[in-house]
Length: 348
Image (tube, rainbow, N blue to C red; front, side, top):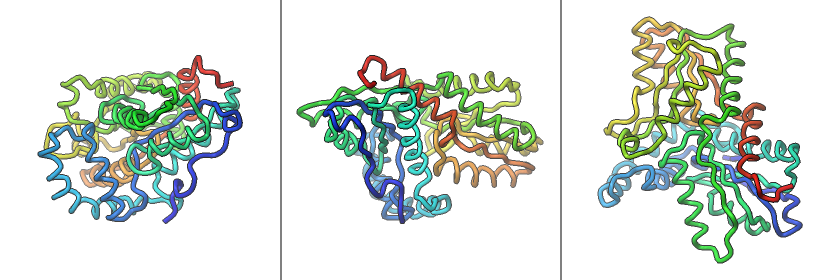
């Protein structure tokens, strides 16, 4: 089945002619190559095998991962991916590829014509190492790594940094690298989110009873150990509500995608939606501000599973607000963030 990363990932730029140049490498979480059990097994082995993602000691975790999880979960996950798979491939890969192409154009319009843009996945293809290698072969000697995670977490952003430095540690001639840690409170990002909500409200004839902002969860233990993710999610939600001028009592932040039996960040998304429906909340607008492109967690977990749970519990209207995807406001925000972090590098 074709995917947007089935062929070459990089296109020639003016920098390849000079032997030097600058690049922006967008990095997203990742996706299986196809919605099949074997592809999911490879993907999940890499994802759940990352010690940044699962902080259980390896000697205890790896037998569970390879002896139980990778024997049972791939087929179930493959069916879920199949339910949201696009003609062009995995939604996450499709949107990430589009963002990469559009950002290249936005930066060119801003005058940064020597700046190349490509994308990588932390897990799956194209890998961070393969893209850094390809950029190096094109003569790129400066790379801004821009994770598509607005809120910083050791489970996501730090893992991207780990992977990039693992490749860097094997190089004799190293390019300069910069990393964007987070942009959870960046005005352009908040405006892009607000624009998406306003556009949704305009189509729907106004707001629902509640605006639910669902972020991906992480173990509560991570926060106790110093991970700033929860605070950054709450800051994003607060700034978005303020930008919209939406009453706080009509907003709700939740956390989704809990894995395992340990306590994760609360309140959990689906139980919260069920409780709302039972308490008489008739309609909800649900968005996922931490995901910059629609993917399994937004299209299947939220727009299918959470929708069914809310309606089954007595809710009347579940209105999903798509992710930023390829919206003009989001690509403008990406361009603004990239330009700020490229400051000082000769990219014109």
